Image (cartoon, helix red, strand yellow):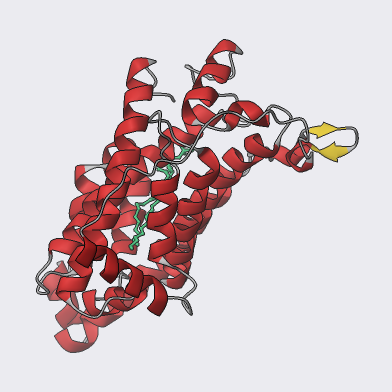
Length: 305
Ligand SMILES: CCCCCCCCCCCCC/C=C/[C@@H](O)[C@H](COP(=O)(O)O)NC(=O)CCCCCCCCCCCCCCC
């Protein structure tokens, strides 16, 4: 009988045994992940299965979309020096696929004067996050494709027959509640999830992002990104995930690049720049999060299955 430590010795040497265990762990974890995803993703019904006049509903151009009177908020103010810094980052970041400036801008622009959230802009910000995850490599593909699925569901509703009701979070909630689109009980597997449920998943993930970016921004450089990410996850999103997803997430965290590489992806070169850029991002996210949270609390929709 070999116990774990002894097992390494049984393998020949402690130097060879440990990497071998790790080498086996990643492929196995990925295998389980793909098996799991292929099982849970099978019953998905895509929006293009909804047809109208022979066309996928998601492609129907809604020419008759009534203009809802919503203006992006212009109230956000940055210190002049921080604004300058953010602008420089934006400029230096143009060659990158993921542009944090575009994401921050979209999170700002999605907040209206009446403190509502414009879904189109909100999704633009999320598409930037997807680019960020894609830039991190294949280990994160499952998280980015899960996020993409959610973005596509909402975009499908926005482009669909009832798109005018999906301009803002409040109008979506109102429409889906009045028309009994929201499912307060578990959905049959062949139904497209409601916009409200889908947005709730992304809304919860925003809280994770807020914590994670805050940790990254406040780190003086010694902390591991995987640890900062795990810390944010344990405090937020993990409470809404199954045991299996939590294990998969833990494996993904280990593959996160070190802080300096993370800085490169967000186009900053030192701790000071990182702090300004990341805390500005957190600020924008918090505003969006709080508005959505208020709407969902008001309608008792924070636990949609
Ligand atoms: C860059 C670091 C990325 C680490 C992200 C870790 C997130 C935690 C793992 C997420 C697991 C996702 C797998 C599927 C989860 C779903 O079960 C679950 C529930 O959906 P369901 O009710 O329809 O079944 N889905 C969700 O919770 C949605 C999760 C969306 C995750 C988005 C994470 C965004 C993180 C982006 C980080 C970017 C950092 C940017 C730095 C500048």
